Structure formats: structure tokens, C-alpha cells
Image (cartoon, rainbow, N blue to C red; front, side, top):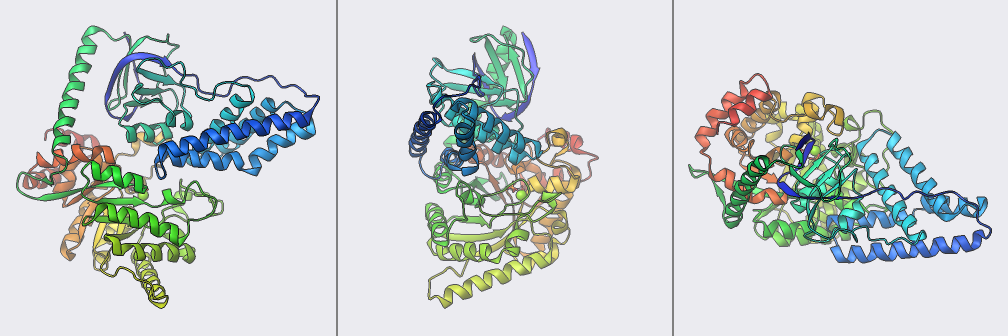
Length: 564
Ligand code: PEP
Ligand code: MG
């Protein structure tokens, strides 16, 4: 047996044979062609094949699904003149064969994106390579489906996977995913968590033989090649314990989450589309604690119109009926860029034009979204939330924008919601510190622990080199959560957490103990977080939380929490 440690990217244990997946551009040898026009025709046919396949896949996955969004972005790339014209130019003016032209343009475009040292753009480089790979396979006459040789359920091992590859994975054939590249925020990690597949990324594996037995734990990042019987027994027992706990949680997932001393903690879902809303309802989510609306702005070349936004919000609000749906206004900037919204070059994008700063600077974007939301609000229980609020001025400007949107709807004689809730994300330390002033003007706070941690500890959340320092259990972050919750309590507004910390069973007691009454988590985590709440007593959590606030560091906090 040889053991390796990678980064746990999606929880769960997988045991099974290795399937080695070769992901990457096929090798090509550049050659000159005697008839560039014939070569152009071949290229056009290949593009058509790839387009037809992508459109078919998009239909298969259904509008609004994450896979359909990835595929939509690939369709845009395929038609992007900067990409396709460049390839054509090499064929037409330099008589280069189409496979070499595709290879060259793909590699050059991807390398430029990667050199910008930005995790979001690096992910776009993977998309460019993905589309280039499909085009190449098409002109070389290779099958476009790369899973033909996957004959039995296996652990899929690759240096990385293309998004179109994960989107076409045959159902039931992947036991787990293990990659050499990747970080916990990479595409593959998000995909695996959404599918409930165990995944370990960033593993330094040696060359493996296909079919070798492998075992991996997506919680701890452990990977074992040729595991001993003893190790297999340990992992199988762990796996059975997890399965039993998950089954028990799933049975009761449509019941509310109430602590032993009778306190109802709302367990809601984080969603990005109306398709997610449907899955969240099925999983027992008691509402939406965070609708990341920026997903609606992806895979299109210009911002989504008011009517299209209205339809999307209306469908989510209707799906949840009487349950609250917290919709966050557009949160782009930082590592999130969307086509059609230009933000000039910034040296520190996370400290720049991000979240509400951007929508306040582009009133048309804000107005369109707020009008769509208020119109859709008549279909359910709407809450509107602003991201990246740093202090009172941002909040008051947001309230003014809401009043203006209401006035413009009234002026147009359109029906709109009036009894909606207004809240802000607490993810900038300054907002947590003045929460008492902010609380007078909102119905709720939702704590974004991902950004709150990054800004409190000065750790770029996308930088793999410092990822280990970004620990939301740091007492400094807990103190800001405590400050926020106590300020909210005095003003009668409620407090939720929608950052990844809310979905960590270890964090639940400290959050409840600090006064949080809503946890908004990734859809697959809803049942287990509900079950975790049911095991706890709020009074005991309060005592524990006070001890955590006095801890020296995050290790001491974790030690205290591991005793519950
Ligand atoms: C957060 O910052 O914790 C959060 C939920 O927002 P996002 O991850 O979308 O920035
Ligand atoms: Mg955030």
C-alpha cells in the first residue's frame, strides 16, 4: 500500500479500481496544406459537429443546470470571433493545417489567461482548452465522447478534467474523482460537491496501472493505492457510518430542524438557478438563504434583461411558496467576471469595484435587477440582500435604489411587492464592527464567512499558496460573527450564515451558540445540517461559543468543538 495526501474537495469515501483518464489536447504535427479553401470547409464542418453536440448536451441537462451553463459558455467560445477568426486566419493566410491552427490558437489563448494569475481566468483557460480539444478531436476524426473506454464503475484519475467531460460522465460510472491539479474552488470540486461524488484534488500520484485498487476519503484528502485489508476495513467502516448518518438525515429532511431545547433553526439552501430551486425543495430546504444571481448573467454576451430576470425570480419564488427566498443582488467583481459588464483593470480586484460598489456605480444594472425582483416578489416571500456592504453609506444608497425602483414601477403602473424584507451580507469586517448602526435599517444580516474570513485574515480566497490560512474558525472571525449577532439581537433583526462555514457540521454548535438562527448551505448538505441541529442544545452551545471566543487560535476552537 502507498498513501498520498491531497486536498479533500468533496466529502465521502470511494473504493474501487482506477480508471486513468487522459485529458488534454491530442498531439499534432504542423503541416502546410495545398488547398486552404478545402481545409476551411473541413474546419467549418468540424465546428458544426461540435456545435451540434454541445447543443444536444445543453438540452439533455436542461435549462438552468450548472452543466448547461458550462456548455452555454462553450458555445459562446466556439463562436467567439477572437478564437475562431484567429484559427481561420492561420489556415487561410499561412496554409496551416486546421489541427495545428486549432492547437496553436488554443494553447496561446489559454496561456495568456493563465499568465494573468487569477483563479477565475485560469478556469476560463480550462474552458478554452476544452473547446479546443473538442474541435481538434472533430477535425482529426476522433470520437467526441471521451468516456467510451469506461466499462465499469471506477475512481477516475486524471491530471484534471475538462468541464465538458464531467458534464458527459455516464451516470453511475464514477465512484470518485482524483486529480493532480485543482484547488478546492476549482470547477471539478464544485462539480463533485454538486453531484455528491467524493473528490480529492492536488494529489501527487505516481504513474498508475489501470484497474489498480484505490481508496480515497474526500473529507480528509487521504488517497491509498493498493490499500491493505486493514485499511480497507477502516475506510469501509467509516463509509458505512457516514451512509447510515446520511440515510437517517434524509429520512427526516422534510421535518424542521429544532434543537433539543426547542429552538427552530432554519436550514435553507444556496442556489444559482431555478433548476437548483427544484432540487433544494426536494432535499428539504426551508427556503433560500442565498440566491447567487450572478449565475444568471453568465453564458450570455450582454446583461440579462428585466423580463428574463423577472421570469427566473418568479419561478424560484413560486417553487418555495411560503418560505423565504433571499435574493442577493448582482455580486460580480473580485474573482467573478461576467460577460458584458466591463470592469477596468484593477491591481487588487477583491478590494475594488465589487458587489454593491459595482451596482451603485452602474445604476442601470441595479435598477433593472431591483425592478425585476420587486415585480416577481408578488409570487412568494421575497427578501432582497446586498453584497459587500462596508458601512452605513452603502446601505443607505441601497435603500434609496430600492425606493427609486418602487417609484419607477408605480410610475409605469406595474404591480410589485411591498412587504418584502431587506438585508445585507456581513462579509466586510467594517460592517460587522458597525453592525449596531446597520441593524436599525435592515430586517436581517446574512454572514458571508467566505469573504469575512478572507478580509479579516488578509488571505486571498483564490490563492492556493495561502489557502490553508483561510480558516473561518479563527477566533478573530468568530468575534466578528458574535458582534454582528449581538447587534442584530438588540434591534430585533435575524441573523443567518450563508458562507461555506454554515455547511460544516463542526461549525454548527458555535454558530447557534453565537445567536445565528438560519443556516444556508449547499443543497446536498441540507439533510445532514438539519440532523446536526437536532443533536444540540442551544444553552450548551452558548457556553461553548463563549469558550471559543476566548480561544488562542483556530486549532483550539476546533479542539473545543470536537468535544461536542
Ligand atoms: C461569502 O462570501 O461567504 C458568500 C457566501 O458569498 P460568495 O461566496 O458568493 O462571495
Ligand atoms: Mg461573498
